[in-house]
Image 1 (cartoon, rainbow, N blue to C red):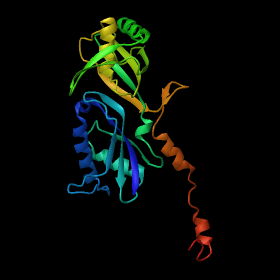
Image 2 (tube, helix red, strand yellow; image 1 turned 90 degrees about the horizontal axis):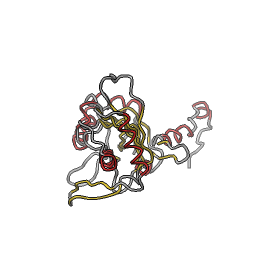
Image 3 (cartoon, rainbow, N blue to C red; image 1 turned 180 degrees about the vertical axis):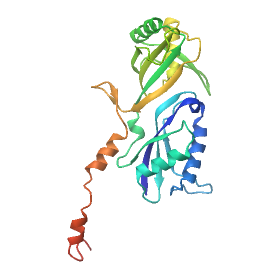
Image 4 (cartoon, rainbow, N blue to C red; image 1 turned 60 degrees about the vertical axis):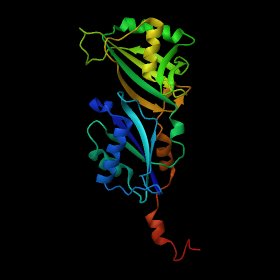
Length: 259
């Protein structure tokens, strides 16, 4: 059995698809591409697909990950291209590696998010960010299945800062751009929780919903303060395997290597 790890995106209007919507679209792409999927046992077999830490509905992402199990070996790049061609525009399969290490989910410990706050001046956003980062705790509330839950949104935040306005934005309308680095903890602290925290500490309330995009997720590097590529260990493991030597195989004596 071969395992392939994929990175995919949610862009444009497709950011409003739910995780269940993506699952259906991806399973259709597997069938169209005639991928030799491994299936679970039981009365209702399902293709063996493991999804990792999906972004909330309504947020865009450049870094979503999943793993599939195959019954026959396939070239990861060829498989990626076939799947990408079978997916709707906006749900794009952009990277693929053969799984040569364990624990992909364990390497998704932090995320980098971009939050575009239309109608908010950069100066007001900066004051709110300073107040949030200076606070020891920032309690926010979120409605869950079992009622309203109160938790600290500050402890999981590694970094929060305002960025310079992007060149594609006209200068006549204010738009603050925030960059957020947050650890994956329990309960999960989402970008909307941080926005609730900014409202709590500085009364920052954007007039329209924020446009939120996950830029990266992976292991958080304490020394550099960056989030690393979770597929890098698989690429390194693949490059460490020496390629087969056809010449050596051709000149090997008959019966060599047999029991």
